Every structure is written in structure tokens, then in C-alpha cells.
Amino acid sequence: MRLLVLLSVLGACWAQYDPHLRNGQTSIVHLFEWRWDDIALECERYLAPNGYGGVQVSPPHENAVITDPFRPWWERYQPISYKICSRSGSENEFREMVRRCNNVGVNIYVDAVVNHMCGSGVSAGTSSTCGSYFNPGNRDFPEVPYSGWDFNDGKCTTWSGEIESYQDIYQVRDCRLTGLLDLALEKDYVRSTIADYLNFLIAIGVAGFRIDAAKHMWPGDIKAFLDKLNNLNTYWFPEGSRPFIYQEVIDLGGEPITSSEYFDNGRVTEFKFGAKLGTVIRKWSGEKMAYLINWGEGWSLIRSDRALVFVDNHDNQRGHGAGGDSILTFWDARLYKMAVGFMLAHPYGLTRVMSSYRWSRYFENGQDVNDWIGPPNDNGVIKRVTINEDTTCGNDWVCEHRWRQIRNMVIFRNVVNGQDFTNWWDNGSNQVAFGRGNRGFIVFNNDDWELSSNLQTGLPSGTYCDVISGDKSDNRCTGIEVYVGSDGYAYFSISNNAEDPFIAIHVDAKL
Ligand code: AAO
Image (cartoon, rainbow, N blue to C red; front, side, top):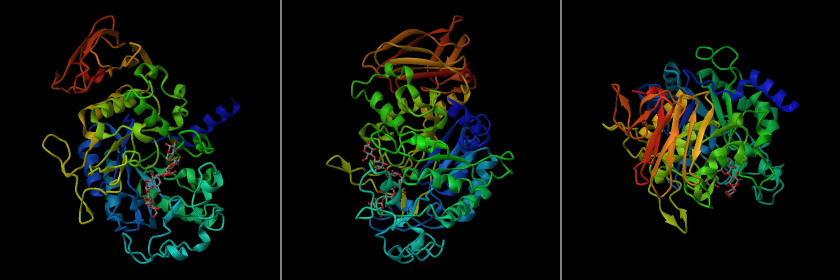
């Protein structure tokens, strides 16, 4: 108890848990592999007008250029130097993006890959996105510079130098993750070099960082470089704002390393969220939506105020990382929209929406052998995100964040922000509903039969526009209309064959 009080007091002054979202915005979106100039445009033309508060961008540092397979997405997780120079664009383009997004109130969060450099097996040379020379064989990265002294080779105790067992916390932190050269973060030189890189980005105006592979660093080593970080740029953020931190720690249980070890440093990615919600929405393992009545800590998820949550991420949407088969993605669009809708309506955690590109999946023995395929490209150059007349994206960009159902639920979350979880109803099976105070209400039908029920919404009486089947425009509704009576009750009917078997209403979509 004393510890909790102390943590929350510290939390108030060390605002590394606070994403510094502006204008009442509550969600962020991961624009995976997008170019900086396209992100700048998207902030102005779509994200700010539709209530998205921030963007997680792909790693901006110089990375190894991998040609076998040809330019996989994962090459960006193999740093060569901390120059801002990648397939997404140059340093100038990065600066422009940060400036333009900040100017419309959309934050930029950088994916910081600081646990390691490139793979040990990559050949020496200048095959890097800015042409910097490097030699993994003798651990030479002169552009940083790092040399043999800066890596953990001496500390790792496995014969192969690799992480061989996730049951051994020393291996997980001191050995190589899939061959990636593991930096010696106990060295002040390494900590300072990483802090210099992150401070450079802070000066440009970024609002925080996703700390990649945080599980593979000692929490104290992460704290040591975080303590060296400057406050955010006061041109856009209030004096004294600390960079927002969320650490990628995969904790599905069953391993000695747990998420909570990292809470002092910032938030943590909660992988149980997508894995369990996917299981429920797929109705696997006897799960039912009715059981979601105590979703959150009641499902042994981490503390809500430490959680960064998502239905899928760039790894587990293609079988990397963790989560397993239950993870829902845009490939299962109907169920996916329900899962994202549930996430955005529910008060738990800080929500991140995924925005993907399409690739040609090809399964052999249940494994997608094309899980490496990089973003839409012309001979390696990332293709632009074109926008179709109906506002969807072209060139194989999926743009889930532009799907009406998802975009409108991002707005729903902003509208109900701060309201309690109220008026839960379920039929004991997969028909459930809940409200957020007197601001919003959502109803799901994931059963194989029709839902028709009179439910207490908690909302003021009036006619509301369902933001899943349509939009309110010019005080008319292009979708289903819901009538809430003076007693707060409304009648809902949702066919199990509906294109989207859920309905959401909120006070800003009242006619
Ligand atoms: C590439 C090649 C490799 C090559 C290497 C070096 O694919 O063959 O050896 O280059 O040349 C990404 C790709 C990697 C890629 C890498 C570098 O995913 O394929 O390697 O770039 O280019 C672990 C980490 C987690 C990591 C995840 C992928 O803990 O940090 O693996 N995610 C981040 C990024 C990711 C990136 C990196 C880190 C590296 O998001 O994009 O890699 O910068 C267990 C552990 C997890 C572990 C998984 C997967 O999970 O708990 O910590 O994640 O295994 O190894 C059940 C369990 C669950 C378990 C799971 C899988 O579900 O409940 O706990 O099974 O076994």
C-alpha cells in the first residue's frame, strides 16, 4: 500500500506515464513503415481532424540494408548508426513531419531500438541506409562509434552467445536476441550515447518513445539512460514535460521476467490484452463476451495506468513476437473491428490502433513463409500512401485507422474520456453492452442469433446516430438511428448476419 502511494506520487511528477496528448485526444496509431512525408500529410488531412492524438513511427535510425530476403520490414530493427536516415526518409523530412504533426496537435513517438545493433551474421561493408561503414564481425560501428568494448559478448554465458532459454533472466538480458549484437548497457558510455540519440529526437520535438526489446535490457540500465533525457521541447509542450515512455515487454506469463519490473520506467505493452481478447471474440477455449464484465485487472492484466494496449502489433499480425493464433488482424476484418471497438469503448489502458500494409501471405505448415515481406515498394523505395475517392488507401496500404468503424470509435473514446464504466448488460453468452457514464453506449452481438433487447443506456433522451453503421452529417444519420427514451432505455436489434454486429452511440452523434 505504502509503495503504491509512493509510486503514484512519483507518477505525478515524473510524467513518463503521460503521453501528453492534446485537445482531449486519447488514442495513438502505429503508421507502420510509412514515409515521413506521408505521415506529415496524414496528421494534417486525417489524424488531427478525426481525433487521433499521436503516431508511433517506425525506427528512424540508419539500419542495415538486407537483400536476402529483399528489403524485409525487419531490417529496420538492425541499427547501424543513430543518423536519422532510413527508407521512411531523411533527417530533414523527419523534422518536417514532427513540425507539421505537432502544429496540428498530433504527437510523434519514436520506436527506439537501443538494445542492440545489427545481426552478427550481416556482412561487413556499407550496405546501410545512409552508406555508413560497419563490421559486425569485430563489433565496429564507427559512425556511432561503438567497438567491441561496448557489447555484451563477455557477459553472455550461453555457448552460442544467443538467448537459449527465456527461463534464465541473465541470458535474456545479456545474450543476443536472434543474433542481434547486444549492447552493454551497464557502461556509462553506451548509456550516454543512447541518451544523446534520444535527446536529439526530443530537441526536434518528439513526445516520447517505444523502447524496443525492453525485456532484453535490465530495468536499471533503461532507467539510467532515461534519467539522462531532457524534458520535451517547450515550443510545443508545457515546461517540465517528461518524454512519454512505453516499453516493449512481452509477458504472457510462464517466464521469470515480468512487466511489473519495468513500471518505474514508464508504461509497458500489455500483450495479454490482444491475446485474450482475440480468444474471446473468436469464442475459443469456451470463452464468451459475457465474461468481459470484469475485463482489465480482473483478467490479470497489468495496472491500467501502466498499460499500453492494442489488438495486434506489427510482429504478432504476421506470427512474429508473441500472442499466438488468437491474435485478430485486418485479415479477419469483421471480428477485428469488434475487438478494436471493444478496446476503444472500454476504459482500460492507453490505446494504440494498428495501421498496416497488405502482403501476400503464404502458409506452409501453419507458418506464413512471407512474414518478412516489406512495405509496398518500387525496387525497395517505399510507395506513397495514395488516398482513394472513398477515403480508403491505395497501393496496398490497409489504413485500418481510416475504417469508419475504427475511426468513429477513436472519436467515441475521446467523447467518453474520464467517464465510468457503467450499465453493463449481457445475455450470459456473447451479447453484451456497456456505457461510459452519460456520454456513450455500445452493444455487441457475437452470438449466432439475433439480439433484440431494451437496454439502459444512461444517455439523455433523443435520437442518436450509430457510428458503426454510419456517420452523423448535417444533422442526419447515414446509418442506423437509435431512440433513447426519457428513462434512458433504448431498443436495440442486431442481426447476427449484420456486416458489423455492433452498435455504438455517443452524445456527439446525437441528432
Ligand atoms: C531477423 C531475422 C532473424 C535473424 C536476425 C538477425 O528474422 O532470423 O537472426 O534478423 O540477423 C524483428 C523481427 C526479427 C528480426 C529482427 C531484426 O521480428 O525476426 O530478426 O527484427 O531484424 C522476442 C522479443 C521481442 C521482439 C520479438 C520479435 O522479446 O522484443 O521477439 N520484438 C521486438 C520488435 C521486433 C524486432 C525486435 C524486437 C528486435 O517488435 O519487430 O524483431 O529489434 C517468447 C518471448 C518473447 C519473444 C518471443 C519471440 O514469446 O516471451 O519475449 O519476443 O518468444 O521469440 C508463447 C509464449 C510467449 C513466447 C511465444 C513465442 O506465445 O507465451 O511468451 O510463445 O515463443
